[in-house]
Image 1: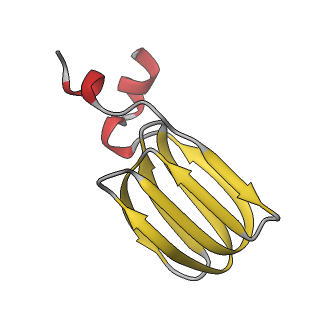
Image 2: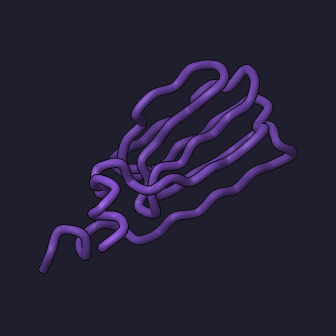
Image 3: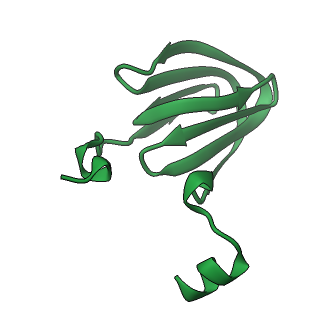
Length: 92
């Protein structure tokens, strides 16, 4: 069985009042500061932008992350490890 099929498939986002964000299916936190948190999830790279963002809870064993602060945007990007050059994306 390929590695991708063995990974947990659950991924959920719960945003409450734009001040409390809970994310499941987190595999890795790439970077974070008060304005941006970049994480790899089972559904791709998720970028959280806002103000006074703080990671309150992180459990990579369970894949859970809780963020407090004012959330302004949630953006998904293609998983950077799966990206190729221009031609591989064009032909792929």
